[in-house]
Image (cartoon, rainbow, N blue to C red; front, top):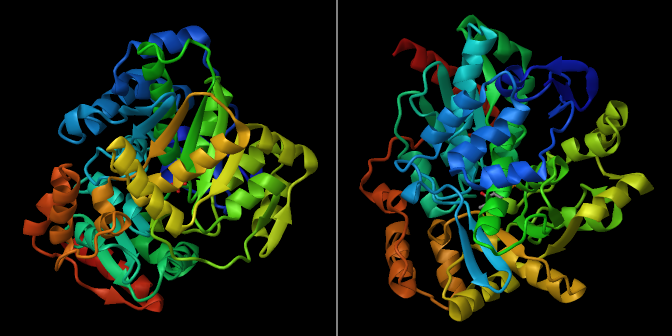
Length: 498
Ligand SMILES: *Cc1c(COP(=O)(O)O)cnc(C)c1O
């Protein structure tokens, strides 16, 4: 299987090359040249497998320069009991008739990013060997909170890789900040940026585009790489849990084989829901993919109208991992739906203000996707009500999805089985969840808030979050955006001298 750039189809790469590069040199994203299909009988076979076996199978269809055995072995390590509560990467939880949550946050950093970022380091190490790459990887990440920690945890002490994470000083929750500043590992670096997420992201992009930096890294034996969701190696592990959820429903008798179900996905960069789209294209019986946004509702509008407007104002919300204006992964969808029109895709993505897609493209989008949004006030109300009525505690991102799912059901009367993707533990956003439940007192620090939420809800917080508070702070540096290149140079230089 080759991977093509969405902006120049002539550029093609193997799976291993795509994983190492992250992005095509022309700025395009890498997409599989064709989408493998799965027969209904294969779903039955998958249903009898463990999660790592299911993941290994699905990934092997896309990454044919890896063996299925090899991928299953990585999945066993990535989703082991040592990493995920009870060794369950993606358990379903029923909360109503034909209503389920897919809990994707049982991993080491309590957000769904772990599912991809426990796998990506293993794929990357193997890709270094498979391609004969001699340089080591220097991974740069700009994070609004969840990706940074999940990437640090995934790549810590991985040979031939160094990873540097930048986060906005004032844009992450107390727990998220502590997760990053106490990070262990010899090959990691963390630095706060004075500014918001956009500043951190712009700083990282500028480093990627800077030829001088690339050369000086090259001289030290490094190439730059990305662990953001533009990397295909992050997307492909996510396709597996859509299949896994379906298999579990089939196995429990909740659905008949071939019955079509809905997935409702809290969306930011469009990575998670795009994985669901690939699953559907492969033949998974999906009825609708429901795209849920917070107040940053550009995607809602796009799915309804076919018009993408980037000029909208950026809103800060209580679901920060979905605060995003430009959803990068949309590029993959546009490329594929336009029949692989690289010129068109490049042109659309480079537009600064807005673009409209052609009628037939808008139509095929609305045939699969539904959309909706939920503001902060409603999100809080939903957290409170779901806890009261179902005795089920959800985080702010998952609550946005639940709100959108309820509205969708009301508007359409659609009675298909619904799976809501639950993307973070409520304990990652303690203060917001406490406030939603009418609490006003959060204690002195993040640990107090965790304890208060435990006491209030009767739910135990994930152990890795509670363990944070005994850990020494390792990273307390701050930088201006324009000094980020120096931080990276120091990081690589110092790390090299070790
Ligand atoms: C990253 C994230 C999202 C958004 O996922 P995308 O793949 O960027 O659409 C939603 N919820 C949480 C908790 C996240 O960390």
